[in-house]
Length: 528
Ligand SMILES: NC(=O)C1=CN([C@@H]2O[C@H](COP(=O)(O)OP(=O)(O)OC[C@H]3O[C@@H](n4cnc5c(N)ncnc54)[C@H](O)[C@@H]3O)[C@@H](O)[C@H]2O)C=CC1
Ligand SMILES: O=C(O)CCC(=O)C(=O)O
Image (cartoon, rainbow, N blue to C red):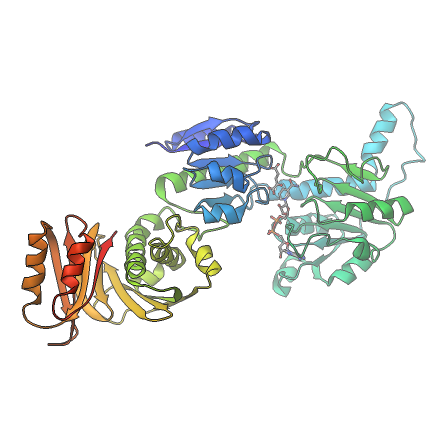
């Protein structure tokens, strides 16, 4: 079935051609994001949803998105997507972290000049025929201190532009390393120093619990008199009421805001002040940036939907289109190992250790670990997916340990899964041979060599003569055809296992009969 993508915001039409070239069907409805009900009513028909900031992908929308595999945000901030709900549904959320950074940094600089020279009000006054030269006395930018709160992609571009304007740039960003600060020619400072020293403060952080109201009444009170404040990042970083009070008192000389606590902002505490300049979330709105992000998101989404490549996902590790085919058989193996263990354990899983050995360690083991966990949890939770599994496991307090080491045996690549529950430990190992077929090569440290089949029977028994004959006759008498039969034992007369592929699932009654055979310790029907 062809993959279908819904574009529900005003993305550059350049995206459409990319989707079509890659064989993905597109429905372009640029105003749909503003109509929550209509979006929810049609989203169920699509594998991908491409958005900007108007579309709010809430848990309610995701509830209806029964076929959705990927949400692509043509831009940076993904705060209009309920990531936790998307992850829980196994939907990948990807963004384009760099495509609009330059444009947004340029907007911050444009707003700084608009404030310094009062360009919007001077323009309105001049065009009204007033010629008020005395009213619009500005300030020079050269030699002033630019204080950046957040110095990531956009903040560092603003830093470079501000340095070019002969400003002295200081930055407060706990995650900015001293080396990076030095490379950027930025002085790393604490927040209080920034507040005390900056002539212009520009915010460039995401909105998080730590950054919400980072400029509050208390911190704004520590700013230098005459400071100008620019917010091109996210509404909510600045307490708008507190800022208005300081604009009214004259402590803050000007504020330029592109983003607001409530958007679209129809009313706002900052509106109407003569020293305030506002734009309607235009930071990313240049034709260059919009083309960049539209092309990039269309490529990323198509690559995921048609080739399994994952890039710039906020809820899954990246996998390139070249890696995807190499990973695929190991993803299958990982899911089988997890599923095998999940079908064997009877009580709550407490810890999962996955040991990667040999060539497989070169692959994206995070994706393999997610696949193991998905396989493990699926027998208990039907809806779990590779994307949601790690979060679900964490929610349930399952400890996940990943170990990578050099090959130490007969296999080029080996994955061993150890699952601990309150009462037992299970250990299952597998590999992928050159033909790409996953195989189970040991169960509870007993060597075996079994291909995986949709229906299997696992038996653990004492290694005594007569068991195999009785077991196979029992299956034959029940009309169950054996496809393949793999045996293993730890030593003569010790513990043995059988992994039998059958053409149809063995009924409980047959399993109960097998269980009654002398020396049988455990019997399970497995399905993959
Ligand atoms: N107005 C618009 O149209 C646009 C707005 N944006 C927004 O701009 C913001 C910045 O984007 P990028 O630079 O690409 O993000 P980024 O992730 O590259 O940089 C964010 C920086 O904030 C820092 N940070 C995080 N918590 C902090 C804290 N508590 N205090 C100080 N610094 C902290 C991080 O260490 C990081 O260096 C985002 O919120 C994004 O959504 C992005 C594009 C367009
Ligand atoms: O798409 C837009 O216009 C908004 C861009 C934005 O805020 C972002 O990329 O974080």
